[in-house]
Amino acid sequence: MSMWMKLAIVLGAVWGAAATSFPASGASPETFLAGWQAAAPREEIRPAFAYDASGGPQRSGALVIATGASVAEHGWFQKAFPVTGGNSYRFEAARKAENVAVPRRSAPVRIVWLDAVGKAVLADPPAGQEKESGRLPLAEPEHPLDGPADRDGWTSVPGVYRAPIHATQAVVELHLQWSPRGRVAWSGVTLAECSPPPSRKVRLATVHYVPTGKAPRMNCEEYAPLIADAAGQQANLVVLGETVPYVRVGKKPHEVAEPVPGPSTEYFGELARKHQLHIVLSLYEREETAVYNTAVLLGPDGRLIGKYRKVCLPHSEIESGVTPGDSYPVFETALGKVAMMICYDGFFPEVARELTNRGAEIIAWPVWGCNPLLAQARACENHVYVVSSTYADAKSNWMISAVFDHAGQPVAKADRWGQVAVAEVDLGQRYFWRNNLGDFHAMAQRHRPAPTPEPAAMPGPSAAGPK
Image (cartoon, rainbow, N blue to C red; front, side, top):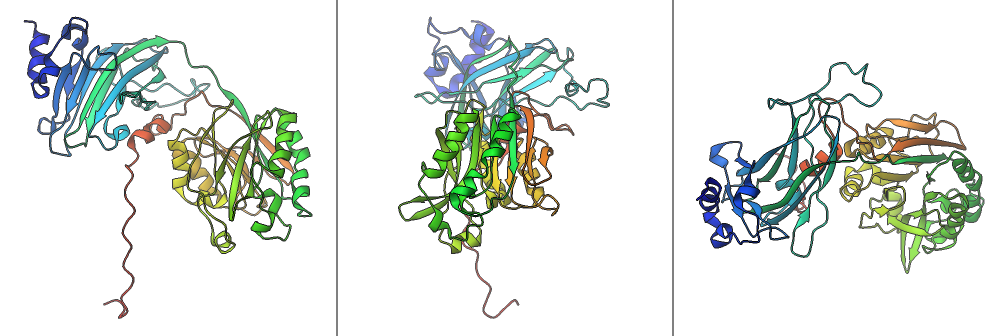
């Protein structure tokens, strides 16, 4: 009996016959386990490791980790794959978690870049800054994100990465942590050289303009030359202001509310079709007796791609009888994954975070006014592009109409009324945060806290006052 057969039987005993049965059609332990090692931060929190010869979506074998009663248990399988620095590699794996409350947090994959002697390597300098990068941080681990799951509960975990110049090996780690009596199986794990991901350059535009308020329809028509200006600058997406038909007309929200699709979306849809670009704006939407502050996304064919209803309402809209939305849609477009939030939403990190959790790459933000630090925060804490269009004067030291990059910096901004500011960004280029935080966009999805129940109501102050 081979050493791998003995190891599989010993480690798999906790799983019974399924873990020690090796059908002729399945991969042999020698083939499947070659190079894989079990590890844990400390022996006292080491979980159980096993090999299931008939596991996996293709019944070709699976590596299994199981925890006991302690929430502290944490362990992983790891294997070193040879790589050539500067080349790109595609990672793929299938994962099935059982009795794991939050798999994206408790059953992650890490890819660690090392040199030939097993030491961490330096990160590559940013593109175009090779000669002026100075002291570089160490290359941070990669964090492949969860993809779709099949009907049997196997979740794909893919990713494409460029190996740092000085890396000669990539250590793949398959984890289970913080899940009492949990079980995770991993199968089909590969890391293979591939072509670099293509560039995905798009041009994002913001319009800095306040409608005159002569009439709801005229408010809309005043944006036509500005949208033409954006098209002349080869913009792919242009963001307009909040509640455009309502601004300055002297009416209440319910008096200007309209259906979606409706007159305003038809008008702006025709402009989107004429100029072959995407348009985002906000308006008051009526659905039966409910009135919502709704952002709409129109495609270059003039059709409504989708809508988002403002979740966080200020007291003025609450007092006017506006109803909040309760969902965070993200829309697949020819540009990438686009989401929307509206004005007061930006005061709360939850909205932008929920949109990012669902895959948003660009967040369009019609906003009447806001603290500009919050725009920077929403962009940098999620590593997404935020495109704001505001009614605040650029000289007021308040919110600006701008395109904010992954670092939270405005890469294009409008400083006068009637200006259209455009920035070209590459959605295919990952952003590596300085100070050794790596690709935080992916890392945040693995490290962000698990959702918690709403807290119980806080007790009010005692009638007798503080003691």
